[in-house]
Length: 456
Figure (cartoon, rainbow, N blue to C red):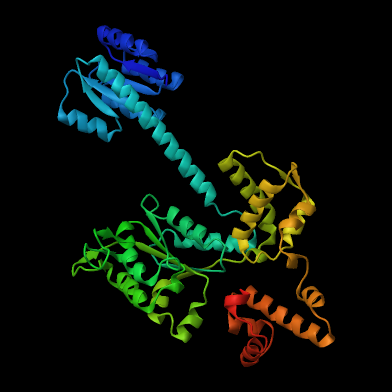
């Protein structure tokens, strides 16, 4: 790779020798006789690498280095000196120098530093690009009143160290809320450690969360650092926290209360400073009543509760989300974008989206890939939308029933399932909304064999 290399040195012999080596290697070499002249070239020429003399009349190298960092943070600066000291090297490194060389400089050292500095610059560019892509991927899109409320809650919660409990249906974007809180907090530059509590089997989750010592159990051939320790000074996100066993809940509660963990197989406690954000699609209050979730842990987690609305409650965001997911898919896959017609967007806006934002994203991706033309209209959208997206409970009942009695039963069952879904299977809330006693709703659930596991 050819590079643009600037040499800033007040000695003509040094400039001439370095230019010869740099030109011979196929790079473009720029020369400056003073710090002030060098700064002008950095502004005009945007070099990739700068070799900067530390001792020059007028403005010295360290001052030039500070000014270069203000002009362009991406340029790599190699300090050169005939009076190299450890203190000078340390100071230059603090200011962002890539490396330090002492005169006389060998040609091999010049070329090696150029090569390594270019690789460092490439890696920095890649990391910046990945970070920007990650920010776009985890961006919360929409301006609906329901989402504005969530954004307001994030803004209030982020600057604090309070624990946050994010609740909402599967696929609504609870992880995006957690990442937004972390990104806008004082811990934003530290680690964000995510743990899916539902995906880890019971025998592994404690080891994942708290770590273990070598030999703590069969198969523990080496020490493992737990997620809480990894998140020290940062944030740990406990996704699907409602799926943890009571035993694990007790240990998480201790971390919240004492700020310390104990690895499996060790009697030593380790202090950790990790902010906890938890999320669940379960009704934890009902889980407490059922004895499957600790009430004390619930109160510890829900210092700041945030409810994320389902997509059906923010239909005005559908068009923005479709555009966002289209751009994201095309950017990540180098894919030519396709246009959604207003009629297709209108059809998608009227969809129930049981899988919420996650389902919408998958649908947009499927349409982008499977639609042969450049335009996605209602015909293409209907091909991928669920069949019951075109009708409510009455239409479903009419299709399935053969008699008036069957129609009433099918319609009533579909109505109840729809209302339960709307209120995240909260029995008390659903009974209140449909204006029926809770005991009557339980009877209907039993009569029609409605169960969250099969109807969710």
